[in-house]
Length: 222
Image (cartoon, rainbow, N blue to C red):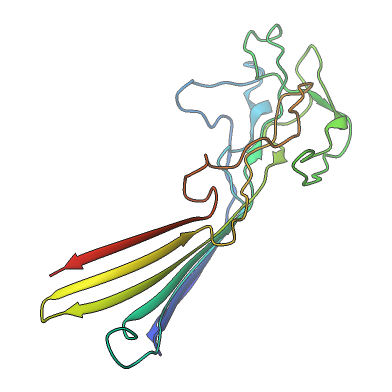
């Protein structure tokens, strides 16, 4: 399901808003390693949410031409914002046992109760219900949902005419305005110290979406 609303430029303001509701299922989301499943004689046992499944996604963009008038210093200012928010991606819980099917990190554990998402960095979900077993576990594939994503970018632009043909644009852009931490997936290996814990952000430090960044730019055009 995709719902969108757009407002063309009116009264110095324009915006676009969209919401997507989706669900993706498959038996295997990898393309470089071939089919990697828990039990090659039971492919349907690996049917579950795709690694890239995102149930909800919301995006809003807006541009506003500031209503300043007067000399060239106060005219031509524009502010814009992009807001993105989406639910988390699935996490496949596995064990390190490779003696059952000959492939490490594909065997899933048994689960003895409801899977509870706690939402803390040190304990994203209740790990006590998972038990590593020396056989094919009863846990389904990609049943735990990891952290979501939230990001707001803002820019301030100044357009200036320099003579009849030359144009100059000065930009100040702030990525991840609120310095919101977007966490990576929790540890998915049963029995390890990192199991259920989040030890990294969604993106490496320095990339857009990892932390607040500010950049300045000047562009000349004819």
